[in-house]
Image (cartoon, rainbow, N blue to C red):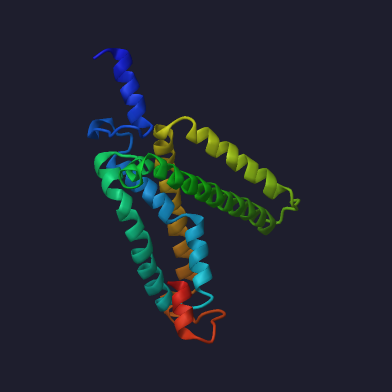
Length: 219
């Protein structure tokens, strides 16, 4: 096999056109776990937990959030995990076996719209976090800081993505330890200030009249 053809096949495989052999995959088990953990403890996860506290207490919140994640996330992840992780296929390519070439394009359109919307929400939340953090530290910041931070976030994301999967893998290996440190500090502050007993006794902040509806919203 010529060097040019081998390079072409490798390029096609990396970009999701062909299945990858185990030794050809950019993501190792460590990389996949790092990426999954980075998503699992992202800022929006904390926001979901805070939102659930409006309707259910601590114990009920832990039960409903874990149950909801097991039902919603696990079922959707299993649909793609077998082919994507086991055989190295890209998600959209995998759908071609079910929907065909044209049907996979429809899935790609919805997937792209979903990712653009979701990334936009995360970028705005990150910008607002910087804004409120600056205010909390006593700095006088203008409202347009949110727009600036959002644009900076877009530039950083673009710079990471265009450099390929390897850079994303390295980036997650740096972000994940930082998230672990933040989580440890957060739990330490909460337990030091309130204690486990006070957390277990915490009541919902603003529940609805129907207990079943409260559980359903948290779930």
